[in-house]
Image: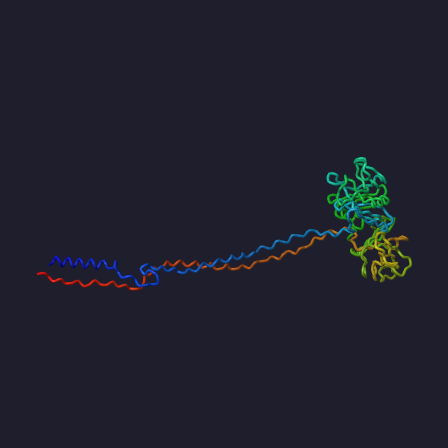
Length: 428
């Protein structure tokens, strides 16, 4: 009996420990196995992109603007290769001299200190460069042939050196192309030949040998007409001067620049006086030449200060024709339309005392002397200080990923309890 009780107890324990293996199937949870844990993924916000760093505050001054290139005034007259201008009427008499500018490939002719001609030229090419310096004309030949270069023709030759440098007619392409000579347009070479004589000074200049006023000459001769030496410029700054002893005699020319507001008196090619006239009215354009009128009611007046007790008489001038210029309408062409040129009484008296019977008055709206190039002034940029900007707050660190929490189905599955053990009747 005791043995049967023990066996029944063991059978009940075995059945109790095996029930999960035979549990009822789980309830339907939407095709999800309720027995398996459901992994839930935590939502994590994407990190905010960092804003670009703000520029640091600048306390350095701005760099000064680079100066522009010098702007040279236009060279007048404007000439193309092979062209020239010849106006001997501007100074009918006086000593002649010439200036050859190698950089500009131009030749300027002066008579009595005033430019009467300008022409394009062609000087020595590379390897045959034309020498610079002051040269008197040594020889003149209307027909000449080279004894160095295949007997090449050199018409209207003006010799500068015995080694082969000369002025003569030839091809002028607009750049240095000769073997050292100075080529001229044929028509100009003939006129220059007739206007020159032996001993006339020719200055050949470039930037290395002469100052800019010689390399780029204007209306008045930049050097002494007799020696080719640089002229004395100490009197240029004076508002008025009168030194007739510098040239006691010779032809006289008066030239006025309405641009410079300067009147210059030249005698025998030397400046003997200058004044700063008061100009009223509207100046005419271009360059014009006038002759003195003895009695005329019209013309361009050159007067003295009328407040003087005994002012000198008013001088009146008649316009003259210039070869190659547009014909001027009417008998008179006043240089100042409806106006006049007024100088001080003292200067007017001194000038009228030396005027010859037929003086020449030149009036131009161009510069008398060399004008330096203008360097454009670019204003420097004001130093700018960039205000300091607080850097943006660093972005919040990304939230850590939340690990999925395994969850089980909430349905409670109750396994059937094993039946209560039966009490076996004891066997007696």
